[in-house]
Length: 124
Image 1 (cartoon, helix red, strand yellow):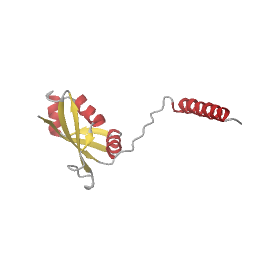
Image 2 (cartoon, helix red, strand yellow):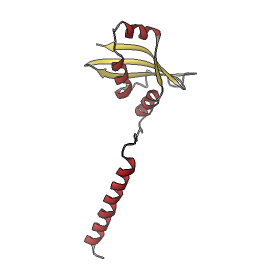
Image 3 (tube, one colour):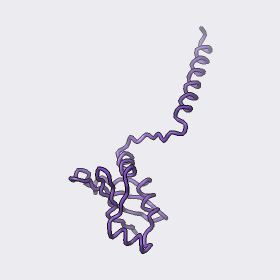
Image 4 (cartoon, one colour):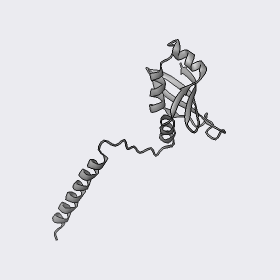
């Protein structure tokens, strides 16, 4: 068998495998959360999000926006140097992000079934 034929068979099988893989994974919510930031944010977002009492009052008074909090929880970065993930019974994480050209800092208490946003700070 010539080299060109081998390359042809390889590319044919490879492309057929990609098509089958795309068919099986189409429409599924698959993700690759390999980094520590992505795993913690995915864990927080998979739970019910609650707000602390002071944050609830700010949301009611429309001082802050819940969409900003949710955006930072999805696209932010965990600051592990300021976080305390091994605290019992719930770990405390500091999430940094940007929303509407403002740097935002969230403090989140991550428990087994509920994640509570404790604090919201806008950095200047």
